[in-house]
Length: 517
Ligand code: MLC
Ligand code: AMP
Image 1 (cartoon, rainbow, N blue to C red):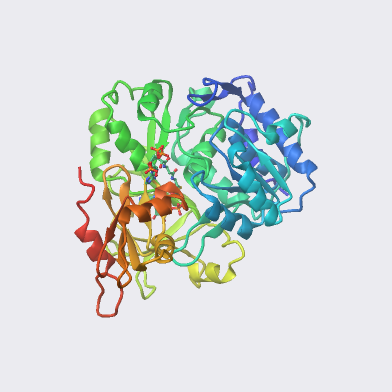
Image 2: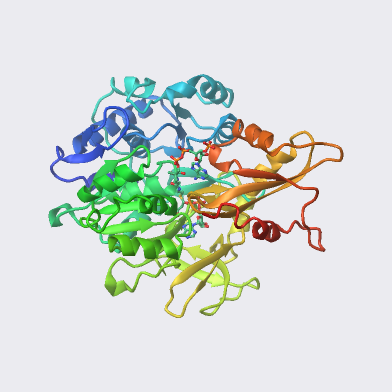
């Protein structure tokens, strides 16, 4: 069989000079630290050997909630190398959120930060996990201590395209989070397509240098950015945290940058962002949330670069992109470009008929990038695919006559705040359980920094008095901070239509100027 292992493909792209710099840290403990390609080769081999020594069963999940570090990236690569399934978890998730993921995925191994070991290990052991390791962002913890005793030679486990590589949890409009099952074929086909489409420059042609400033627990930072650089043998300048000033200062040494729109908005607020600062750059990419045309225009005016906006999701990795090469067309603000080569994208109306150019409908996708289904949720999987095998994205859009796609809304009740997804149903359920609450509605309204800001409307039970600030405080102690409403309004009732459905559009209209300026 031909090997479709993601790790093997990335490893094959390492430059022949293994002592060249692969990653240089820009912040975090001990920065600047320099990691060579040989360090990546040896480090991933030692961690892969540690995982192999645990005698785990096939398809064992390795759940990871650690701060961003090069060793955390090595852990991801080592999981692929050893043939297991990677399950990344947002660092902002708190106990109840982690408890659900660990209970649902039943990982064989959990890796967490040393500071969370006490509660997280207890919870993991309860769920049947046999191995809990720690990994700090300063190279401390039991994972590296144990891996240091292992051989630095390891033969990457061979994989077919259909074999599972990662599970990414994505929330649902109703019910609990679903684990999207991504195969080696999904990840590798997408990485190869993007390498060509975005014109990654081979090291022998001058090469590319990527500024990596995104978290590595989602598609954008983990797959699109890391695979992009590694599959091209390109160096990364590695930021554990996004700091606009510090990133701008390093643009002179880089050629590629990827960010969610919030990162672009924050860099635009810095006077040091100039044409000169960006003169060395080849490509700015944006996605995960809508990039406002104003941001696109302002970026071009300030830097001379037209941002390439692309569209993706956990279940499909990347679906469409604005062109990089002029021969492929023009980059258009407010659009997400063309379907990527080999990826089918169609727009259909509610009756299931294809929409002609200009008409709005549901966006559906088919291709080697599309996941195989949701972990242990065959019913949900069936619901999300059409009878002819297309995945329903839940996004609403239209093609223009040139075949350029624009996203105009979402049929799923979802808020995207700073590139993170927030599902109103999850927050509403938590608020509704609080004493004195009759009901609630959570919506997103325009926010200058995060794109959308989460707010909540709460109706008290008869005779109860509610305090918005206390509700915020309670939520902060229970869920990831980016999900917590920035403001809570106490209302006597929620607006409803004649069918009794809460009119969220009215709530959004009423509060659309809340964060203006
Ligand atoms: C932080 N805060 C947020 C927030 N991030 N609030 C709303 N939305 C967010 N995204 C709040 C915290 O709650 C906290 O509030 C305060 O900001 C400071 O927290 P912080 O952690 O110090 O924030 P900061 O470092 O400034 O983070 C902002 C950010 C980060 C934009 C850098 O959110 C980020 O890295 N976003 C990228 C997300 C991403 O990678 N998405 C890709 C998904 S993949 P308080 O009140 O507690 O002090 C995908 C598919 C695809 O969608 O197409 O790519
Ligand atoms: P996630 O489930 O976190 O992967 O988020 C995927 C969702 O992000 C998609 O379904 C879209 O709604 C949204 N998204 C990603 N890229 C873009 C973009 N360029 N413009 C608008 N929305 C986007």
